[in-house]
Length: 221
Image (cartoon, rainbow, N blue to C red; front, side, top):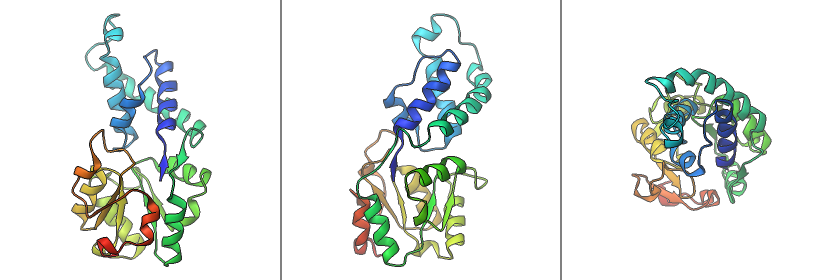
């Protein structure tokens, strides 16, 4: 729903600067997001610590990324909350698509691997919070997507059967969770899919804009 790549980039680079590490590239962030903030931090640290300009000064040792993880995670949370939504934009068609679903009386929930506090603040900042009866983050359940548990629990909260609950996502991560939970899944074509073509993912349909949710007959809704 929201292009948050700018938020990730700024928060990560402020975190890395505090650790005296080189800034992350936007391309790396795009390939790495989607599996939760913990995974993002670990992946970025491992990548940045392996850069030639870092290893040339002998700053890398075995387990260095793990040593830096806790201070990096704490700093990242602070920086992200400070700038949450300031460098992000709602994708075109999102408001229209959500409004169309609400007009049809469809119950909606937001399920993300982003920490719940981040998600709630972002939805409010972008005026999207009023569309969802439930919001769940990556820390709301014992496991994250692509594990099916968060999606199964979301269906329970909505009072719907998985087979009758459409999962709308933007990556293979979302599709795997939906398949494992027994939900039909549609993927938007404009999000982040770890650098891979999203149309190659096993899904029931693809949306170029959420406004296409006004007519979901092509995937049985």
